[in-house]
Length: 188
Image (cartoon, rainbow, N blue to C red; front, side):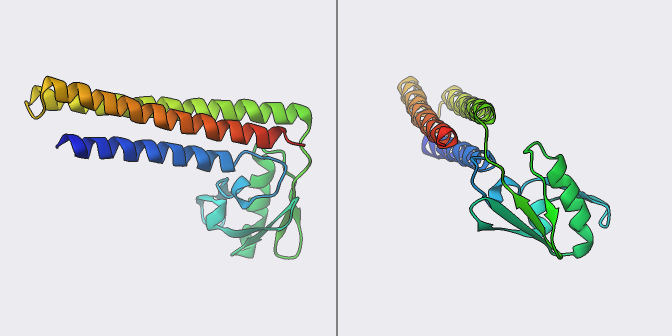
C-alpha cells in the first residue's frame, strides 16, 4: 500500500463518518414532519416473523408540514407498524386511517428542544470519536509503511501532518453541522 492510497482511504472513511452523522441528524425531530424521522424504526412484524426497518415495509410521505402518512405495502402489517411507532422514543401517536396511518407531529416544548440539543451534541461527539479512530488507523498504517521502508522518516512526518489536517477539516465540518442542527432545533 502506498501513502497516497492510505490518505485517500482515511479521507473516504472521514467523509463516511460525517455522512453518517447527517443521517443520524435527520432522525432528530425539529417539529417539522420528515419521513427520515421514522423511516429507520425497527418494526417486529408478526406476519413475517422478524424485524424490519419501517422504510422497507411502507411508503412514508409528508402531505402536510406537521403530518406524516405511512402506507404499508401489506395491510396486515399496519398494527405492527402502529405499535412500533408508538413505542419508539419520539413521543408520536399514530392513528389508523383506511389502509394507512396518519402520524401527527406535535409542537416541541422548550424542555424537549433542550433534550434534542443534548442528543445532537452527543451524536456530534460520537462522530468526532469515529474521526479520531480513523486518524489513529491512518497513522498506524503510516508507521507500518515506515517500518517496511516504504516511506522515509520525513515521509512519515508528512503523512501524519496530512492525516491531522484531514482530521481538523472534518472535525470542523462536524461542529458546523451540529451548530446548524442546534439552531434549527431551538428556532420556534
